[in-house]
Amino acid sequence: MRKVKEQALVTYTVNRPAEMPFWNEIVCGDSADLLKLISADSVDLVITSPPYFQQREYDGGGVGNEKKPDDYIFALMKIFRECVRVIKPTGSIVFNIGDKYEDSSLLLMPYKFAIAATEQCGVTLVNNVTWVKSNPTPRQFKRRLVSSTEPFFHFVKSQKYKYFIDEFLKPADESKPNGNGTGENVGKKYFLLIEQSKLTSKQKEMARNALEEVIEEVRNSEIQGFRMKIRGIHSEPFGGQEGGRKIQLDKNGFTIIRIYGNPMKKDVIATPVESLKNCPHPAIYPVKIVDEFIKLLTQRGDVVLDPFVGSGSTAVATYQNERAYIGFDISEEYCLYAQKRLSSVKYQLSLWERNDAANA
Ligand SMILES: C[S@@+](CC[C@H](N)C(=O)[O-])C[C@H]1O[C@@H](n2cnc3c(N)ncnc32)[C@H](O)[C@@H]1O
Image 1 (cartoon, rainbow, N blue to C red):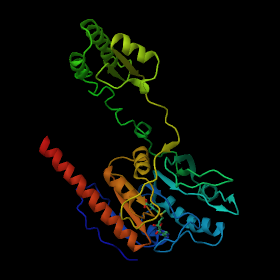
Image 2 (image 1 turned 90 degrees about the vertical axis):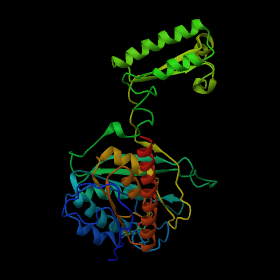
Image 3 (image 1 turned 60 degrees about the horizontal axis):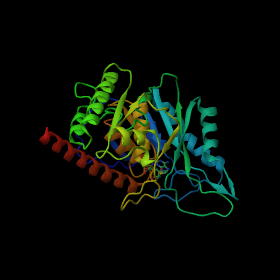
Image 4 (image 1 turned 60 degrees about the vertical axis):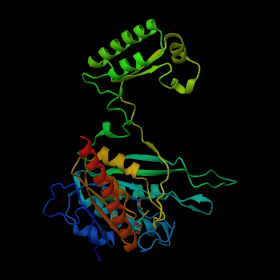
């Protein structure tokens, strides 16, 4: 095993258990061996994307180029079994695997893997979360459609698994739906905007009254939040299409959109395939997806492990969420790249922190 030393500055420290090796490290080696060095029931989340079956030659060899599908599943299961051993009873395992065509037929490799995992390792498959790629590789087939989805399987080994559903796919502005929080300042900015608008004085009075009414609804927790659109200040709702809100805007000069509760949490994540400038790794997965699973399944300070860390996407998402990462990869080149990528993310974050402190 060759171990690559962590060089980057670590600004965030959590309580590292004495028996936990590879804390906040990217380590070069075969996961089948490295996982054995980790104690049972010590990791909060394993999230990873192993090499797909016969998809490409990676720099360091490893899993993926077996001759037959069964041999590939066998090699994967060797590592998956270790993942099950190392996660805590409150932990989760998320595996992303893509499919492969052979003789014009899909092999259903992801599902063969999921069946083997549930049958051989006693895990429960909580969800098959579908990643919808908004920018799949541009290709055109005459006799089939372009594949633009991949599964992320969420497994647990006990029903005690941590789960923070409100954190999953949280709208960016959910915490402050009216742009001013829900305290004393709720909706205050809209009063200013009403004054600045070109509404008539009668319309301004109506707008202020309606605003006071909706603020009261938020304070009484009757609604979660609201947005107000004022003619001449905000863009037209719904792309300016004809409809009730457009009529209200034309007639009254404003409209109020009430937000009644959390959107349904569905098993779909739509996000583009990522590419990184000068990245030697040919198949990275989106940090955004890892970020969502980390928020859904772990808490600040928890340990997240990726046994096929490649370019370091999992470690980046983990660090950004103030969890501790452990990343393994068989390729020294990818390990070094992942470390460089992490150093740059840490440096950027430290600059923002310094900037925030200076502006506080
Ligand atoms: C699909 S890539 C992972 C990409 C990663 N999710 C990212 O965003 O960069 C799979 C990785 O597994 C590594 N690999 C293959 N077999 C391995 C093994 N036995 N142990 C550790 N790493 C292995 C390959 O070098 C490759 O980087």
